[in-house]
Length: 359
Image (cartoon, rainbow, N blue to C red):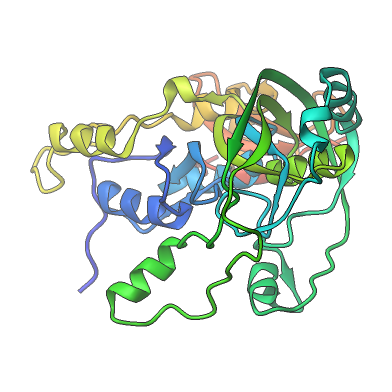
């Protein structure tokens, strides 16, 4: 028998501070359990190695996720120059190290010039070990099976690429590909791990230059590809050793909760089977539909009649014909009525959140 939806939760966004080692799918699964509903999704995958902001939609808020996926994102990261890996991050095996003396010879001015070359509007080839599908099969599956993977470049924007700190150290190149969480679960079931890539690079320390950076990028940008391309531009190779997402659109790490905090919050809220349970009493720190929309797109205020018409899907006149991008339409009480397309003379309601009222 299907489990009833938790009546205490309501609709909104959970801004999760994803822990390292978790897949985004695992976070969604945990949030489904906490929220007592299957209607849960996320607005943009984070690799298992990465931490930070993962925006999770609950109930009606899942219909907002498509607009948040396209929002700009900000990250802090550490780029290691001097070692190239199969995955462009520290989870993959080393495939090459810089020529002797090359890292030591790098100057700050050379690094800054290469960073500048990867800023603004650029064409980026995604990481080979990525979830992009080629003829129905993920690129990472093809790469790990030994296939040559050729991905097309895509237009992205790097609106901020700041170097915050630089450290010259020595490090051992990664020797074995890290377990992805699904591989761990398979072995817990008694399955053997097969086809483990191993590095042909010696396990001896090599000079590297670590850069702590902060980047703001458009949707679809791979930060580990920035690390790869920065290393290539400098002739020493590079990969990512740390990645933390600090902002998705208007939602920052300051409003994010850890999984432990979400567990405690739900335990302190109204039990799902309480006879007086009401939406919004679960204890979960949900960002409302209205606040989420205000923080991610322009807002249009509707009067009562306009709200009624839009609720019925009627194409009322646009407030700003030709406006590009989604517009949040709020009624006179501040409730989110719909997401509008105002690119034409009359609006096109793309998603309607309110139930139509009688005429």
